[in-house]
Image (cartoon, rainbow, N blue to C red; front, side, top):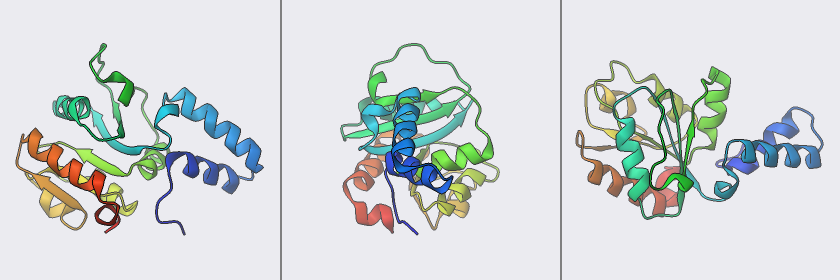
Length: 178
């Protein structure tokens, strides 16, 4: 139906699909963006991840801190983080999401940045590919087998390589859409 919507546009669309008048959908979208601390990010590229309690969350956060592009980062994780440099451009969601909520959030991502190793079977890659969200991950275990049709791969633990791939996708809407 629609190739890519911004997070805000998707919230308007979802509200309208559930029968809300347009102005009510816009108001609720603004409230949700504010609640999730995403108001400043509504027109930026959204780079997202689902971290749960993985050690590689630190890789995601380090990339988010030092990335130079005009993007906003979102990670859903059980892990608790205190204040860290770059916090204004990083949203950490602490609450568990239902599968429907997870897929709705995934639809808002422009890029799925998932630094992970030892994935037995990367279901999350299939979920990202089902939403046509390009993936950046490490070339480790089953990652390449599962995400090869929708992903770019950095060497294991190569955060600079992963950042270079992110920069490439962030600058090229045609490659993100491919």
